[in-house]
Length: 309
Ligand SMILES: NC(=O)c1ccc[n+]([C@@H]2O[C@H](COP(=O)([O-])OP(=O)(O)OC[C@H]3O[C@@H](n4cnc5c(N)ncnc54)[C@H](O)[C@@H]3O)[C@@H](O)[C@H]2O)c1
Image (tube, rainbow, N blue to C red; front, top):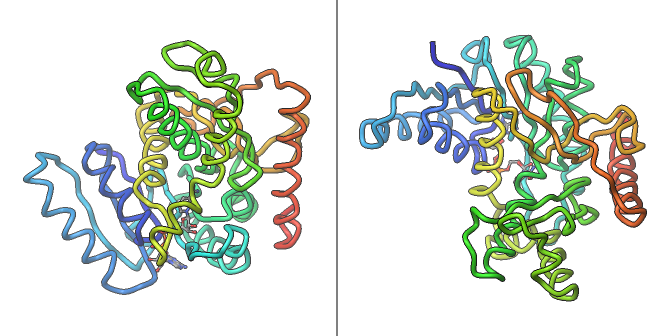
C-alpha cells in the first residue's frame, strides 16, 4: 500500500511540497485548505501531470479532515506568510490561532501520524503543535534547518564554484535572525570551509544565510520563499517514509540537550520511520554555545507571549 501524506495549507509552500512529493512518487497526497476550491483545483491540476511524469500517486484536494484519516505524515503550512518589512515574529498571534485549530483536527483524524511544522515563526509554531497534539516529541518536528543550511550550501558552492553535491553545512538555533551557521562543521568534499574561505568573506556568507528569507521576500513583495522551503520539508518527509536514518538539522523539543530544556530549537536530528529518532549532540565552542542560547532565549520569548513556554 502506498504511504499517505497530508499537507495542510495549499498555498505556495503547501502546493509546491505536493509537487515535489508527487515528482518523487513518495506517497499519495491530500492537500487541505480552508479556502474552498483552491486545494481541489491545484490537486486536480497536479494529478493531470502524473501521466506525463510517469508517476502513480493519488492527489486529492479537500476542505474536510475526513479525507486525511490515517496519514503517515502531516505537513502543516497553514497560516499567513511574510510581506516586505515584516519579520517572522509578526506572524505570531495569527498563526498560533491557526496552528492550534489545525493540530486539533489533524490529531483526531490521524492519531498516529508524524507532524512536520513549517508555518512561522517556526520554533514557536512547532512548540504550539507539540503542546496541542499531546504527541511524544518524536512525532512533532519543525522544518527550518534543512532550508537554512541549503541556503548556506548554495552560497558556499557559488563562492567556490563547486558542485552543490560537494557541500555540507550546518545551521543551528531558531529560524530567525539569531540562527547559528556553523562554519566549523561545514565542508566541501570533507574539507572544512574555514580552510577554503577567508574569515571575513565567510562572515558575509553566514549573514546572507541568516537573512536568506528576507532577501527573497524583498524580491517577491507579495509573499515569501516556497521552492526551497517545500523541498526542505519534503526531504524530511522522505527520510521518514523511507526510514533513512538521515541526519538533518531540524527543530526538536529539547529536554536537556545542549543545556536547553522544554523548548523547540534547531539541532542535528536523525530522522527515520519513528520520526525524530535521535538528537545528535556536537561539541560547541563557548561562543557557539552562547549564540545557541541567545537563539533559544528569543524562541522562549515568543513562546511566552502565546502561552506555550
Ligand atoms: N519554516 C520555514 O523555513 C518556512 C519557509 C517558508 C515559509 N514558511 C511559512 O509557511 C507558511 C506558509 O507559507 P506560504 O508561502 O505557503 O503562504 P500562503 O499564504 O501561500 O499559504 C498559506 C495557506 O494556508 C491556508 N490557511 C490559512 N488558515 C488555514 C487553516 N485554518 N486551515 C488550513 N489552511 C489554512 C491559506 O488559505 C493559504 O492557502 C507561512 O507561515 C510562512 O511564513 C516557513
